[in-house]
Amino acid sequence: MTDSSVAAPTNDVGGIAADRLRSFVERLERLEEEKKGISDDIKDVYLEAKGTGFDVKIIRTIIRLRKKAKEERQEEEELIELYKMALGMD
Image 1 (cartoon, one colour):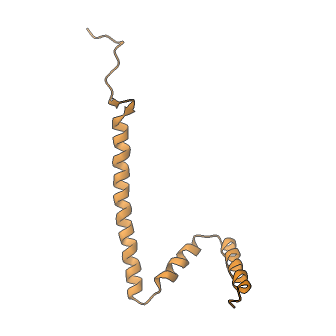
Image 2 (image 1 turned 90 degrees about the vertical axis):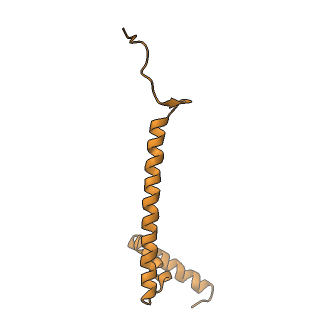
Image 3 (image 1 turned 45 degrees about the vertical axis):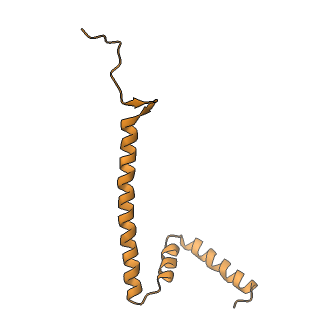
């Protein structure tokens, strides 16, 4: 005969659900590994672009600018021009 008042054993350690924690950690480890792979792929593309004569620094700038809205880019460009004029760079 079983006592229904006895809770089923859990995998809690010190109040922490170990299985749930392990699941999060393993998922994060897989994602970090995927991120490293993607990072390596991105590096390879930049090296390929550089090898064909493109300026990688400019490509990075273009990518950063393309992420912004047109209005945000225009405002940034206007401020850059204003600051350059203030510093006598034109």
